[in-house]
Every structure is written in structure tokens, then in C-alpha cells.
Length: 249
Ligand code: SF4
Image (tube, helix red, strand yellow):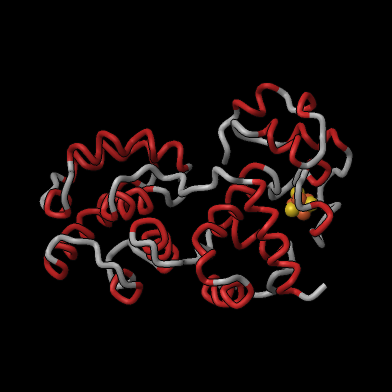
């Protein structure tokens, strides 16, 4: 099967498999998403979501970050790790937004990537989720899976973004990113993918990378682990209770 046809077929299955796919960083506006994305470097989304309610309440505007007391901000975001660098990024981001964009997060890739702490990946997350501009988010899961699925051989994130953009229709880019990342966190793990309990099994060129018997259902993760098993034609009772309760990476 041609690469594009196979990729689109897999994308359709992913859409059915993960109807709940969404940006896992809690946010209410573009600024909050930019801040949460900066905090998510080397940290789980869950940990970020534990920190942000207090943070967003204390610093509702870009001007608040620009004028933040460094020690106080550091304390608030400490649980996300690398808190000194992240504090610098947040203060610089606030200052740049105030100085150059009237305190608003701009809605264009070319502007976003000039902001402190915002690389192309973060910019695409913000565009796709806060501005409804289709964007492909090449994070570690996305990168790993599209290469495993032979959608591309590229290793550079920007080249991966363009290669996948040529395979999948633009209007689907943002949701595809969420679905691929969901699959990477819940089913297609780096070391031991749950091939025997995966809805993509029949279409996946990497089928067999992980165990292929139905007991692979034990490897499924997240609150919908039982649904994921059932969707793959596997007995949901094979999913241990703790797998369904476990945090996704
Ligand atoms: S079949 Fe295996 S390698 Fe392919 S997507 Fe599913 S879990 Fe990943």
C-alpha cells in the first residue's frame, strides 16, 4: 500500500480509537497554553496541570509575568523541574508580549517563534489549540511513532512536520497530532508496545515490535484502557485495574 494511503488509513483508525484525544495541558486561553507548554519541558502534563491553577490565578496577564517576583514564581513552578530556566522563560515571555504585542499572544507562527521559550513545537501547539490554525506537533511521541509506522524516515522535527503535512489533509493536522500522541502514551509505548491489543495492528508495518498475544492488553494505559482493548477485539477483562488507573507518561 502506498505511504499516503496507509498513513490516511491509520489516521482514520486513530480517530475512531481515540475520540477523547485533546491537548492534555489544561488551559483557558493562548497565554495559559503558552505558559503550560513552557512548563511541560521535561515534565509530565499531569504534573503541569497540578501547578497551573494556582499559577494562572496569580498571573492572569502577560504583564503579571513580566513584573513577577522571581523567587515567588520559582516556588510556584518548582514541581515541574528546571524551574530557574522556566522562570526566566516566563518572565522574558511576559516582557516580550508586553513590549511587542500589547500583552497578547500573537496568532502567527512567524511571530510566535520569535518569543522567548517558544520553539516551533510550542508554536504549533498554541496555533492548533488556541487559534484553530491547523498545526502538527512533533513531540517525542509523535516523532517516534511516525518513524515506527514508516510514514517518514526523517529525523529532523521540522522535516518530519513537512513530511507528515504532505500525507495528511491540513484540516486534520491538529487532531492527528493529539491522536498520535494519545496512542504513543496509551498503546504504542517506546519499549513494549501493546501490539496484541492495538487497533492499528492490521495496518501497522511495525506490528510485532511488542507482544502480539491478547495479554498485551496488560500494557494498555489510561482511563479508557478497557475501551481500547475492546476496540482492538481483545477481552477488556485482561486489562488490570491498575493499568486503567495509571497515569499516562
Ligand atoms: S501494532 Fe504495535 S507497533 Fe503498531 S501501532 Fe500498534 S502497538 Fe504500535
